[in-house]
Image (cartoon, rainbow, N blue to C red; front, side, top):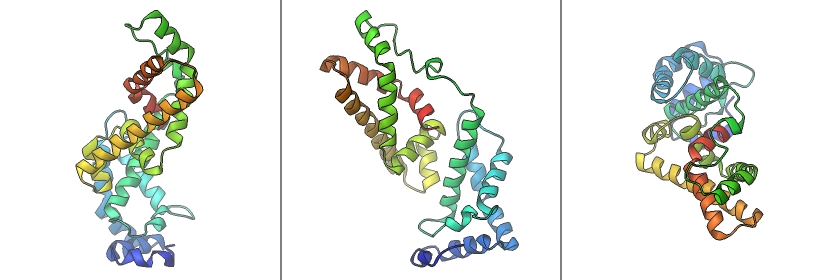
Length: 230
């Protein structure tokens, strides 16, 4: 059930909060109205996502189950801080990412294209360094990713694991395209900077060697991030 702590937010989107509260109480008419209003938004999230994904009707069913089924239905968490439409799109996006992740076979990192980290034009010394520190590089990236704030992790997850582009991220969160692009860019820079700091503290490498490895991490970030943020 919605708590009294949501009263202030309710003044922003009173109708949305009232509908969500009715759904949380199990009002069948309210649930039917909710589904008629927002099923198209769930389908839109599905249509705009790239890559392998479950059937759209399966996604809709999963979202409705999350929102309305069980002792603690997710619809009770809506507090009116944004439109109910955008909130539903976020739930649908995260559900789609979870479902797509479960469809992917578990692949060992060394078989996924992330490592070995050797490019055809690497000189023998650098090729050795990349092989030698593959584990440290992977661990540094994971630690940097875990240190991100929730907003940064979410936007990277939506982009790399969910396959959402700038326009799709903007639509899901109800923000301007430029804001979505800025969030994604800042999140990307944060995780790369964190990775470099961790590697610099751990590895006794020259500046040139460290910068070369850092560039390699950036060039393969889409592969690494897809796995880490799945």
